[in-house]
Length: 408
Image 1: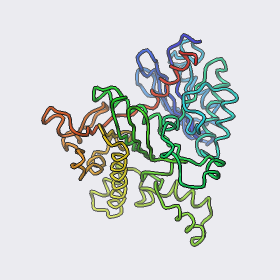
Image 2: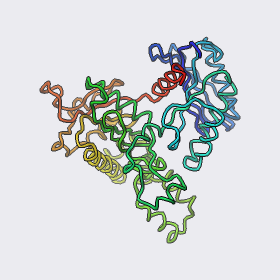
Image 3: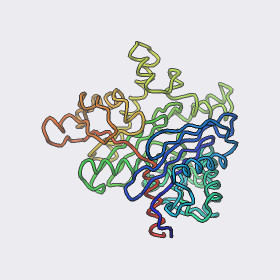
Image 4: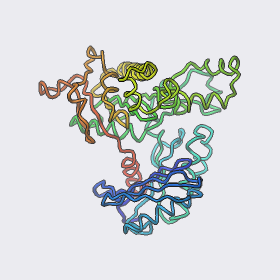
């Protein structure tokens, strides 16, 4: 077992690699960066070293191997060589772990083969995650490689929440069930929200709203996920940047039989040309808010559809949990778009849910309460509404480090 205290976190996409080097003694970032446009003639590497002076390199990265070698070179230039004994593990984000992988897992050939078998239920993500693991293993075959799964936190959902009401034999044969995604974020934020309240996670019921270009909600009871909005794939649930979220399954049949669209065309429509983009032509919430303020009717409708779905899930998860201690907004939109937070909670005062306009308008990178009662009366509101920045990379690093330290 390595005595190192650093973990390199890799998030490999189909044409990109995001990375962070984290020292687990204090959770500090030693370096971070992004390689994008892998496989294209003009690639780009952005690297931020410990001092924070960003470096940018424009060059071709023919494959992920070339990209990670370039990352290794940038780290070495900062005295953070990948061959250093201070590196304890490499943690990999893997989107889909099915039902088998419910915890962080040391990567072996057998584990990699099982992740590969899950490609049909995560065709856009697992192949790239596998590539990242394979390249990292080739660079450091002696170092523990740990897979941390987006689905893992949700595998504890009760069966009645995970099952779709379709023929059980067909569902089991084809692994059709609700898996959920963004699990590392929901796990991190639910715990961070409990800390913000000064309570143990086991004592707190939280609704987590992870709102980025992709979006998902979860109901977390005493530290355990009991319901989440995404399902077999990341398409189900909230309205997202380019994904439709919840849609009548009959729409698929209608578009195929009546509209003449192929299955692949419908897949592309619902995943890449729907959501906010499909409603108004923009998937950037900042642009939608600007257009809406200027009187653009399409942008306004897109915003209203978006927040209506959010309110519906807040109400549903309130019913699932029975008692809600906190609602936590997180990720790019959740942390930065005050109008979204205000609109999503508007009209819910009877449930003990409200935000203070002044507190809601404050921009900060720290976890904070935006409920009005908190500062006005000094007492706790019935439901604390909070903004809690997520940190998926730190969560992956913590889980990977804990695994290699225990030798499990």
